[in-house]
Length: 66
Image 1 (cartoon, rainbow, N blue to C red):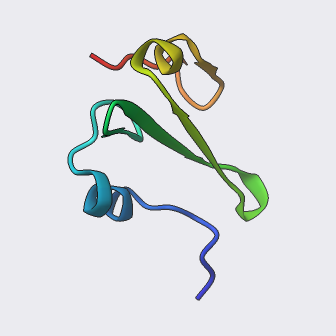
Image 2 (image 1 turned 135 degrees about the vertical axis):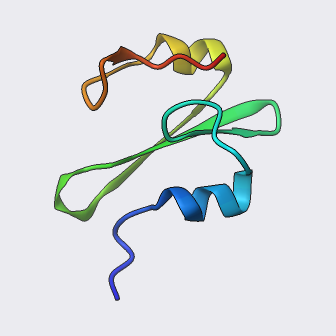
């Protein structure tokens, strides 16, 4: 079994319920993951303002953490 993707259930196990699309609260910060082509996974870690400002091509514009 290859471990080249992250699943929502794996993230939920460690961080609880998501606060936005593939985004979880981790202490004072937030963790977001994106499964990229060729088996790569990208993690974005930052504040609510920082991740809300990040434009992503894998969704319809900017992320919105409420």
